[in-house]
Length: 61
Image (cartoon, rainbow, N blue to C red; front, side, top):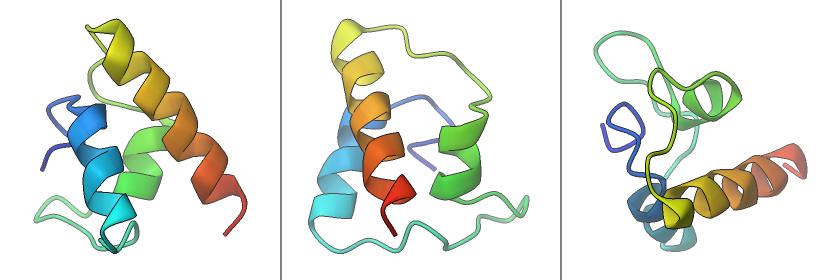
């Protein structure tokens, strides 16, 4: 849900604590799919940086 709202800093925190990036929401979207093509662009510089970190992390898995 955090990914859907563009809260990438929170998503990064949750992933660092073991959240599953492939778990889908009720619309069939996962963090992995949202990171590839977010519904909302990051508004804050911290969220933009977190999104880039998430993309890099998911590219290695």
